[in-house]
Amino acid sequence: LICELRSKQYLDWDEELIMSAIPSRLDYASPIIQLMLAADLGNRMPDQCGVVYSRCSFTGQDIMKLMRQRGTSLTIPTNPEFECTVLFLWNQKLKDGDNQTLALPPLLPDNLSQYQ
Image (cartoon, one colour):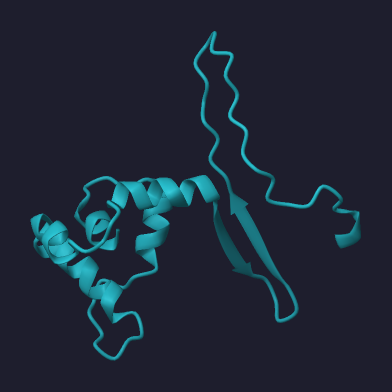
């Protein structure tokens, strides 16, 4: 995914969010060096992403689709005691006259009063 995203000319906002977490400068002591190397490969030789990562069963497009189906959360630190977590969910737009609805499984319990 990272290699393919780095090779794209236009990124959607959620793809930009993912890529913004990976520094462009390689740091071989970093715990995320594998992600940095994937991004570097996508930047330098994008046609090699599929060759180097041929064991991956999914394309970058498939992985993004799976992530979008489950949602993406973003945690914003506010102060030492609290943080704010925002969950982004994707909904399928329906065409005019289309009677189909898209139902996703609930992510939260029906009774939220216990959490208030």
